[in-house]
Image (cartoon, rainbow, N blue to C red; front, side, top):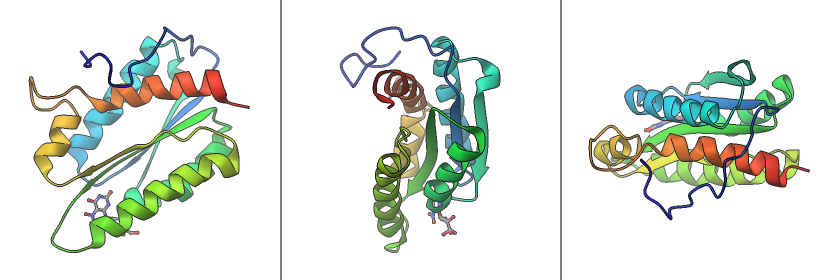
Length: 160
Ligand SMILES: O=c1[nH]c(NC[C@H](O)[C@H](O)[C@H](O)CO)c([N+](=O)[O-])c(=O)[nH]1
């Protein structure tokens, strides 16, 4: 169960009229799959209909911003959850992608007027990523669940 106080949902929202996109990168599959599953689980718990959870993928996190914009338009989404896992390597590639993707996803929601949840793990190690996907027992909860809850709350509370 998620640790109380870490941005926890403030009430049980009814997501039954929402259309939600989950767009995931295909790097670090084991962690990605757990995060996607966690987001889906929470969306269903908050009454989002299974047929209104649209799941698509992109090669890597760098493609998330462009494809998120396209997915919102293609499926007329109320909110999108881009999910990626970036793990530091031996070059500066990690820093450049993290910075570019986080800024682009933030800007996108203002440009397009649809909430874009930040579902990108930017980790120094594989273990950090696994922990945040709930894959290490007793360590951390699955952050994908937080993103699902955040998506429903934000879409219901703040969408224009
Ligand atoms: O999602 C990821 N993409 C990664 N690279 C691919 C990148 O996102 C693009 O798909 C690629 O550069 C083509 O545009 C990663 N690394 O390079 O380490 C990574 O850790 N995670």
